[in-house]
Length: 119
Image (cartoon, rainbow, N blue to C red; front, side, top):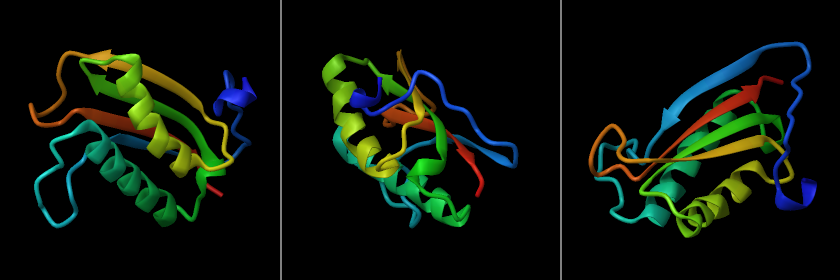
């Protein structure tokens, strides 16, 4: 399934693994989250990229992404996927997409969990 930009199976070499809780579109400065899904997905991807940087990791080190989208449709998942493609680069993590009725707060439209092998 390499042509689709993800793997059915991800194998992490022995070592440390980081499990990141679901990231949402909360801005570091406490500002309001964007109102639209694409805007929120972009903020979430930036937050995940910051976590990768803190771990001295890259997109190739992402083992798994779990994507939760409110009132999901294929089109909504594709909007989020655009930003995940930028985040993971050439990496081929396993990705699960899950449609949900609601998330932590009514204004949050997307939440993404990530598992990373720490280099």
